[in-house]
Image (cartoon, rainbow, N blue to C red; front, side, top):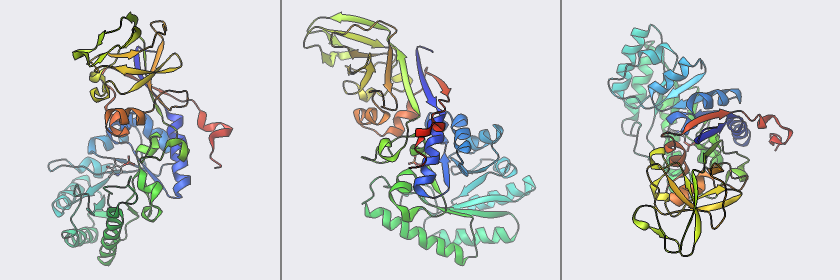
Length: 384
Ligand SMILES: *Cc1c(COP(=O)(O)O)cnc(C)c1O
């Protein structure tokens, strides 16, 4: 064990992927972009495949190519190329690329010629997020060009997809509007002669909260790692297990008197004599500074509040008179099943979402991937 580390249990990822397929009744694309949401892209991807993920999804071409280099040969979609990206390796290696514009299709046609094989392309319609994707106004031209390219033998259009803006707020009328636009876009694609293998719209929250949005495939990121996909929808409610634990060894324990000002600028002043613990991780390791004076950690069986500002390399916690030995394990966050805070607790303390907590943690922390095998135990809950 190292002084401060991220521990990832791939058994939890396998369990979650199976659980998501079972709950949604839909094939699952496990999204492993951003180094598997901080869990390690390759181990997360392998765990997802072992659990039956029929697709993997990533943002960039580099991420997709790294999966192929690791030996992954399954369906794989990427969705964030930029002009000048060489699409030829993606075509050559059977990676599905996403096109938002006719210009991207033109570049893809040229890459397919160089690769000496047909590309696999998915078309994205922007139904209201106003991020990537074709606007509804440009959609007819995009599907016409896509169909022409199919007829010319440049590619197969394997998918049509879109992405929600507010899926974690199921009552937001934007969800209904986006789904309606998506259905219209699918109709236009069909009329243009396209017959995609997969039509997909839902991320984790929509996959769980909006059955009408499941179509042929659900794209699950956060839920595959066992984190809350929406406010009030806890992993325990869903039968999911957080896969990541962040722990450190307590560096120092000391007594301070009443009035001691703790950490930079004395943003916490001890109201009475207490004991303080020094945790050797800080914002350079992705521990958000905005969690200062708000988050908690688990030490010696109890939650201990962070006192004062989070520093670059260190955090001070209040041990309230207890005197655990230096070297005692500190759990910053984990599954929450042993009393430790969760990534969601840290997100609330820091005023952000759990996605940011797990993707930011890193810096000097080492990552240790374990396989507890807990997804093979009789109480794994697959029958639920
Ligand atoms: C990141 C991402 C997802 C996964 O979203 P979660 O909310 O983590 O399930 C799905 N689709 C697209 C396009 C994404 O960028």
